[in-house]
Image (cartoon, rainbow, N blue to C red; front, side):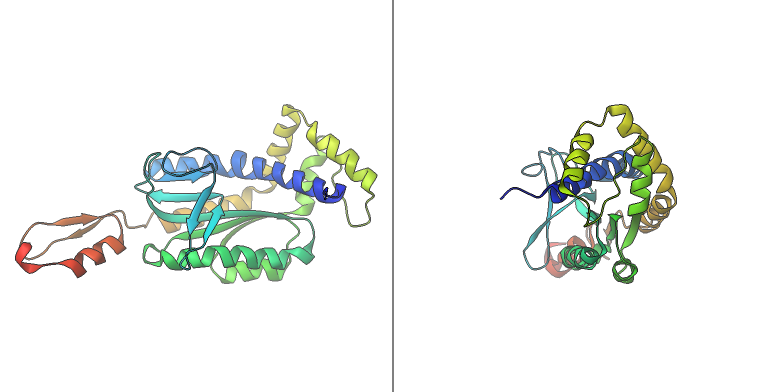
Length: 254
């Protein structure tokens, strides 16, 4: 069954916002920070260390979840490192869907965090559209760092190129079809103007998010050294590996 014009427009708008907000506004800042700390930033695209183009991690129940960004210690294009930050994004037009989406994100990320709890990873979410205060509070109360770009700010950003994207459940299919065609025909310069306006409108939220990320990861353990009273020293990059080594110590072989 073909998607309704309203659903199709909402999907296409969400995809464009993902491209602009995640990959043109947030990604460069995450890359600069990761490179400065010699961390590895993984995001959608080819990487020889994994299959396909999606970033996928397993939770404590053995379920895999696709994510937008993961920052790793010791990761390279050829090697999966230890995860220290997980970031997911979502777009919702109507508040009636926002609580469910918040619960979906929480249900996907928290079991991953629990699996990697010894490395105390940072976890955050980028939300655009209509999300209720209770949905936002639910995420923040569970220690998510949040970038929230309200729907009205999205409308303002598109208005700079003369594109009125304000719509509701009473908007006609014909209006959605026209808007969908216009969305697909946006020029490079128009997309740049939209990005610049969204960057301006979301700056405080993004700055706050990056401050929380830096506060969490700049104090992150980079190396663990075990120095037995006899024998050689051992170095590790994760608490799990260090504890495993301690459990396997054989005194006669040190």
